[in-house]
Image 1: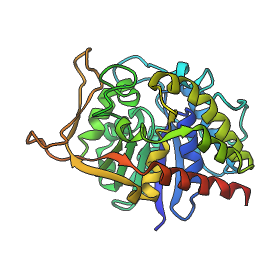
Image 2: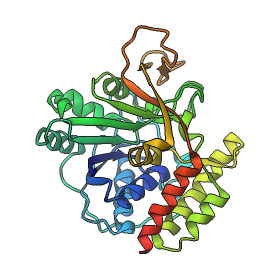
Image 3: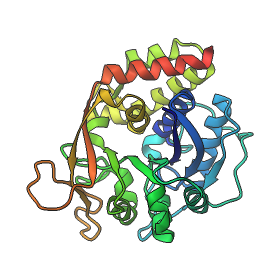
Image 4: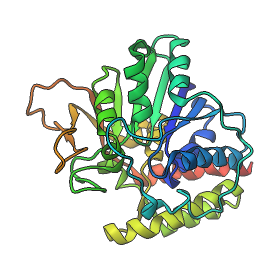
Length: 314
């Protein structure tokens, strides 16, 4: 089945790879549009980086929309220390040919959903949830149109990667995350518990590079840079490849293990701001709102990624 999706992102090397994986999977996705948000780097770089991926992959036909540059309540926090000053260090940045659309990303999301059939469009946010939360708050009538929301963010067993308690995407805009998690639509959430199993080891990056096509070489370049910070931080064999887990789950859900849980977000305490409280063992009576993904076949994930990236050389 070809699923209609909108990818909402803040590229970021891992967001960029998620886009490339979606581009390479036309039998799985009709990618309606890409929306960008301030996150890993400021908004003017996230929309440029998304358009660069369209150029590199030969998909200038996919419309790209810039959205919210600041979170709903808190000041923007960015992550250049991890992603580099361009957000996609590891390849040379350039001014893309893919145009930036005039419409605001939130208006695009609202307009597209209102015109759609019920439960017909999947939203795939891989950055802070500002655009999605703003769209829901602005026009609640979009909710029945959403088939599901498949997002990268949060953590349970892995704690946090930006603070002791919070994963970056949720920390940047916890108030938007709260809106999304309480929206009542089906949500699948892939947080650090699963993404920290998907490591870009040297062998895996070399296999991608060996494909020899420009998209694979760009992917290998970005992953080689991305590896530097996280490998040192986590003392691991490679950096976690967070955001492509959303696209991989949509293509091959059998690679993942999940559990129906309640997930809530801390929006008041500065000590634990952005913490995702995952009721994994159902110790409260809070309603189930999330399919919480907690494990993955990492080798199977990389086989899928490599198989799809090889298509750009065909």
